[in-house]
Image (cartoon, rainbow, N blue to C red; front, side, top):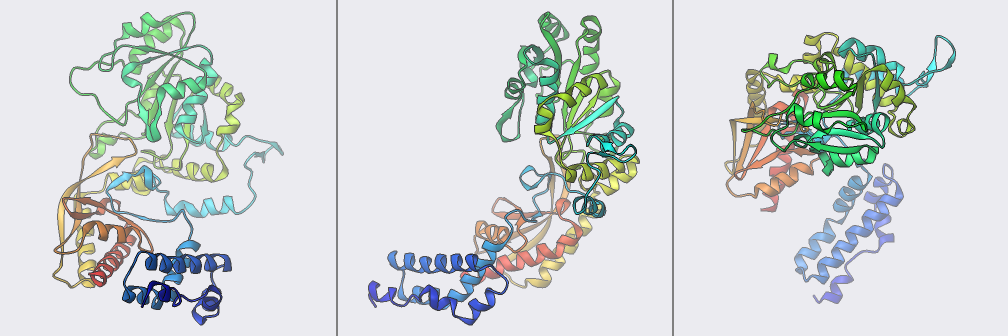
Amino acid sequence: MGKTNLFTLIPKVDDVLEREETKELLLTIPRTIVLKSIREEINNIRNAIRNNSSEADIQLLINNLNKTIKANAVKLDSFKLKRVVNASGVVIHTNLGRSLINKKIMNNISEVVTHYTNLEYDLNNGIRGSRYAHLEEVISNVVGGESSMVVNNNAAAVILALSTMAKNREVIISRGELIEIGGSFRIPEVMEESGAKLIEVGTTNKTHLKDYENAITSETAAILKVHTSNYRIMGFTSSVDSKELLALKSKYDIPIIEDLGSGVLIDLSNYGLQLEPTVQSSLASGVDIVTFSGDKLLGGPQAGIIVGNKKYIDMMKRNPLTRAFRVDKFTIAALEATLRYYLDESTAIEEIPTLAMLTMSIEKLGRKAEILRDEIERRIIDDDYKIEIEDDFSEVGGGSLPLEKLATKCIVLSSNGQSVQEIENRLRNFETPIIARINKDKIYFDLRTIDDEEISIVAEGVKYALDVNKECS
């Protein structure tokens, strides 16, 4: 049959709309989406004819039209931001939303966001209140400090602090701390946006106390310390910690601002991880303002938390930028509930998902791996695929503890004939997308970041991916 005749086989849109399968689809999916799906699938058939696909392939596309229209419509109608299974082993995965919120606090969050609240209302006095007041007490109880406030992320926290304390004046920082954070945002650019004038001292690998002191002038407004949480310089190095800078603070009456980034609130070395400076230790050393993230090692929602000297934080609350950077009731509810866990360290380790994953024992990981292997093998009985348990390493992620390698257990899938890349693609397009990693032509499912309730989802996803590939082979 010629190309022209093949075009005559394509049904009209109106005819497809009259099919019983389409009418059934319209009961659950909006008409505009169904129409878009029909037109896209019909256009796919036209393109296949133009690209000289065989008559048999064209006929198969036409025969499967109802099925492909439905699949496309369901995909078009689904939410773009959706749940995925993180099987990558990167605990604080920036691309997958960083830290998880404990399900136990969702009832409180739901109560807050589905009803009116006292977000900016003082219940005691019946007057307008401050949204920051809801967090001040719990932050003080957990980390200390005279005062606190919360903005929408840590970059905003740094900009706000610098804009308030050092606009149009000089801020001294070591060259070794001019880091780049996620999304190509760089500390020098953040400082420039704040209106502060950057004064670099020292070298990339070595900065001494005298370098800071030699740079102090009448225009110096603050010294900025930035914790290099997302990389390490090894070897011939020297840096000045915040405690050493106190001498300059006292001598020249210059405030110290420290950006700790990751937001560690407990000593992780007690749980087998590398020692990371805590917010409490920074405040105890005499730092005036400390900023850190809410959704990294703290394990809460995205937020930038500012703690320290009440004089400076009160000034920040009056800064016009504060309104642009302010957090909403979702963030406040989630952050308050998360911080409450920190009132007891053992509770925090157990109930905050990020901390629970980071401190999970190799024995528990092994048990989870055996369960997942059995679940997959129960669904897949095929010599073309090999399922094994292997030792490997997880990563902390989120620019935190870059040198930390967490011993873990992985389910490793290898294929004798199918493309591993295609299997991985199918996993990403499963009804609950599964994000695994490929290494040496094998797919790795890291049990550290797979929740117990997700084991069956992963097993079903593997079955889906392999079944589809088998059909296509």
